[in-house]
Length: 472
Image 1 (cartoon, rainbow, N blue to C red):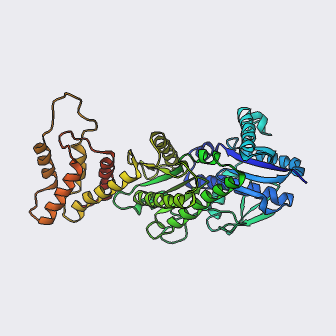
Image 2 (image 1 turned 180 degrees about the vertical axis):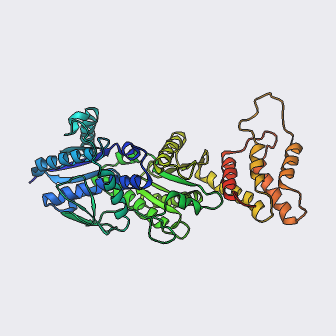
Image 3 (image 1 turned 90 degrees about the horizontal axis):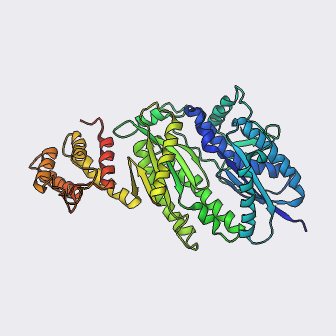
């Protein structure tokens, strides 16, 4: 009986490659599509070149893959991966690295995984021993055009292809081996929703998406990541569980994010950048991104309740997101994408199952409170004719820090309410007075003397300010 081997591959350096050289929007999107497809196409191409069954593909996507192979083909596998590694480093100017580990499929999964991880550690610590390219080759003049063209072609492509002559190049619709793009078992999943311009012929750029926002014309990038996903995978007891769970998460992000983007409230205002094994990224109108984040978190909560109910612990069952807004309409997409990554890291270091937006990190329940307060704030403008400037005035009467113990009280309740009444106005209309009373109660809380607005209140004020920008 032939001994089976397990091949696990990882692509490292994606963030550095994506952000290198401050790429423009088409180049950045093309690079991201290429990186996403590498971990899907390479294992399928390997199996096809060896003439083996498609059933040997365990998991793929998210910049890594796992394949079960017979021991006899190990030399061909090493040759294939070495050639792909050299070509990947050439195309990425040495910023991307393909690493792989191979071990016999013998013993418990925990033991097998340990052997794979040890081999990865050795290759990571000795990078020159893990690559067949001593120095990164220079990109040719046509390579940026390749990524841009790939990104454009994949928008409507029905299939992707691969050829052994260029083992790192992925083509839209051609090559020695091809695979359809879709959700079938043999297809390559590729979430690629793209909003179009008003004429319906071109992809909408970030400034165009910003113009479709409510209130202030601002665009941003939303990134999300499953909390403690690696810990969840390490706790699995068999390779079958590992493959099953990896595929479930990948299908959730590839499927649900794509479907959400196609809903009426999002389809013209968002562009999907990528979905991975445990993360995603979209960009577009700022207000659509906040609504998108809330809906995706709700769907993810339902997904984990249904599919992870037999797995103990909270690992892998919550998701954290971060929203970064572009300071200018013409800010490069890569720059805002990087800022979203930094904000996501801040959120995950502070807590789990939260959302960093508009300068604060909130729990998801707090985001609901902020949304309700934002609606109250904007209703004063839309329904009762209060000048939008009042929202800026409200921001100015809150202190960022609490009063020091023993310090003299600088505010009295009647002074605070007098300032609020002056800002909000004094109409005698009953509905206005009820709305004003409710808003003041939500802003002040139980301690109007020590005025410190909660994080959700700060987010609500900024949210309302952006929503009412430009209104008269």
